[in-house]
Length: 423
Image (cartoon, rainbow, N blue to C red; front, side, top):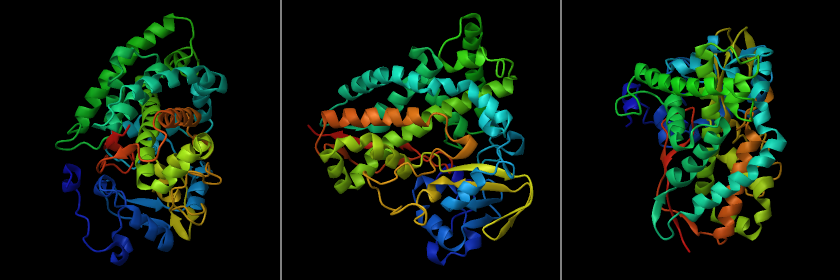
């Protein structure tokens, strides 16, 4: 049992089908570390799609588990707020990062204006400029992989490639880029004995080092002409040029986590999914042209790199026959909505040639839809094109053991995945 779970109430040993619904707590970290939350969500979608959990490690909350209900919450920000002062966008109560001002944790119209500052980084013309660089780096990383030896895919490929991309987006010193995934993990981890950090105070102290490093770079960008990197964009735009220290750190962490977790965990999740579905792997190898149109969005749906997003009700409202009161915490479980068979045909199957493959919730929806979704898709597309160029036969990329998963209901990710490449 994880150290975090040891501090929480124990999970019932009863089979899920016989466990009373009022004992369901799908946020429990052990469910995510062990990948055992699926039957809980399946039963909630079937029997209680808008479900209240009165007691959890993170306080009471509502679970929204069906695709259409999640869409309702996403498209009514006047009812369901993302505002950091109300608790922000995650289920966590004690994580001080959740209460930092950042544009994703703001409601329209302020959110909309702040978001526009960084949107040019993923404009089509800039993605076109970055495509060659992404392919060069992907090729170099794959050419360095050992053939016939077991290695950790997460470290050698997923973290390696996303960290290089993050350094480019910020124009961060390339030789210091390993700090970026550390700060990303630091922002979302659950403190506890033996963890990345043991206390909330330790987390915020280390994130102060992140703020100091970026403040130095910020001052350099202010003195330099505007350029196409995230720091320069914020430094030279009046909407973000005078951010408070709290908002500065909040937006840094938002962009670091956003640029890291979706792509990084989908890079790993795709390898695992194709290993677990060898018929689909064969189908992909026979027709690599489906990589961009259907494989990549299907990987992102299947993986669902962020398990949830939170909103807070600002007025009393009705949803699914339940009364949600003003101030209640509302959790949109993207991972459940992406397996909702009423909205997605054959939702419980991984299909590399899925029709309407972009019909998923992994990037969110509405005003808060992930600003970097096209960049994430581009990185995954290039990765799979280069993988199949080198190893075009089914089974040449073989998963050698179980992954070690992140013990968090927010980041649905991997700490390691043993892989062997066969010539």
